[in-house]
Length: 485
Image 1 (cartoon, rainbow, N blue to C red):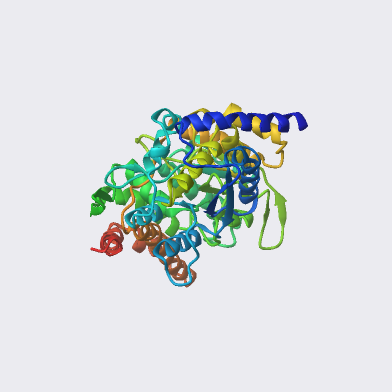
Image 2 (cartoon, rainbow, N blue to C red):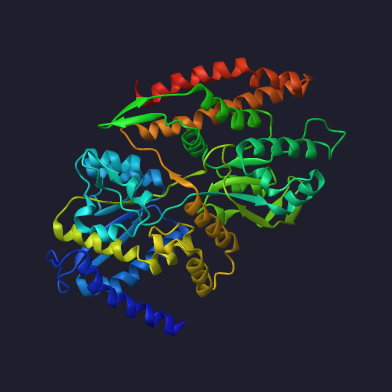
């Protein structure tokens, strides 16, 4: 371990010359005797923040010390808290803190900051050769504005995976003669969830209609956005920052059939903030979550009667719609550099280059569940070696999550919707509308069943063609309202 640490520091110092060459011969006024301070606001917490802070210390003690850069980082809470604080600072709101030199941001927040004229085009500080080393889709997400400048720099990305309670799955699969392949499409997943409901309902023959839900997912908005794209629909086309809305009833019907309907029927479920918490109490046995959230998948289940039993988990790819090319979401905030002076902006670029080098990018990924952003670092053999070097035996879920996620990056098409002025409101609507209406319909149908109405009759009213037509009309009007039309 000591030798590895010494080697790491030596390599970091040797990188200084490379970093200078990559940005050109100019040093933009950096002076080791009079260091330039770079402030960063981020949303990392817990283990992620620890890993980020460790790397910042390493930078300050090596490249930063040699070139005259001191990085100071601060967690601003969650993503929404960070966005609110950053925009308030950029607007100069009363009581707001001075703006940082860099802050983590999703495209929606970066777009607003860019419209305010506050964001640096980082392509000025990177050569074409350097940018070619990054995953193209990650850079594309950061190209904002009429001139398509690089306004969001990728430092760590995530996608989604499916987590499965293998212990409870195996008993069910053996009884029903099903395999993991039956979880590969949204259509077949809904069918498996129905079988699981019937299977668990039969365990208590004296109690009718008490089957268990099979599946839940953390981000319903991702399902609605990426699923629509996969089926050939983008809700908006963006021209000069203006959004033109479009819908497709057939596409929306497939989305509705594969989430709303099984949810109303009790095959899908959500209650806690995250589906890992629902899995902990046995309310579901399968879930789709982010790669960073996979680390929280439980190792045991605690039932209502306080029965506790250990479970084994397994990581699977995200399902896709049958007959379509595979798609998966690309997410994770990048870094936005705030306009200041060339010296400070250049110092930010030096840090971003250093942080995203293969060794450090993988090191951060191993501890956080984020994916490296350079092509050469998206290599599971290298990631696996880093896990081994870290001695991180307690993170088996994260290890296998990274294996599946890297495979998805290589074989799925990555997608994130283009931002515009009200894209955050639209995204919120897309996730909330289908979830809230499905929950309300499920609750109403369950009450009717409890009062003696047959399950078939009660559910039919909420899942019929007529029910979809009414739901779809509300969807279209709500989407128009969300975009401000």
